[in-house]
Length: 316
Image (tube, rainbow, N blue to C red; front, side, top):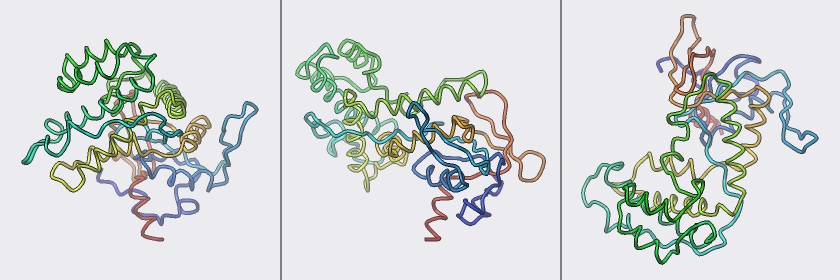
């Protein structure tokens, strides 16, 4: 986008110097910096979080908040931090993406390196699922591990192996869907996306607090290990860094609870991913469209969470 963003024009004190009340604002990026941008525009404007009669967190607006349209490349916030500790045996060390197994020269990460990393991630995930939750599978680790090791990640044979071994779809690892949960989904209107997002946040919070899904914790640990193992090598890749932050280094659950409360109060509106942002006629007006819903919305300011966080660091 060629337009100058609000972050380039404002001091980082969004509480007093940011967009005025009621102004439609696009907030790009739902990564680690999101809460630091939302807080001064909501609680910093006099709003507050409380609990209703059922004990659920709600947001009580002050009337001083802008309307915050949220979007990002993936269209969803980072997964909540896992709220429990590992209880079973740790997965074996990486074997498929071990240094000696990686290409010796320059390689295309997604074609040549990622399949090896993904196979290690699956190895860690299914090791935990099978050994810690044997009642949810139709195999033993002793039978599964050699059959899994013999096949390429993503191949028809390994998919068939997993279907036979893991009867519940919710227990199977789908890295593509985890990476892009909105891929291929299109709603008839933005309201449909809001309902989907509320369900997505609720399901994520429930799963991240439930140790019966401890395979997710094994996956997170394996992702961090893979990312750190490749750091500083020719095979390090920014996409893997981003995936690790998204799946394994997310915010405390409380931040996502509050995000859901802001959405329920109408302060936050989700726009999904793959956003197109174009200047529109009048000065400082942009039209924003997305792949998950028809039409477009007009905003009068654009905030990039990464820019804001960087500028806040400069002023400390």
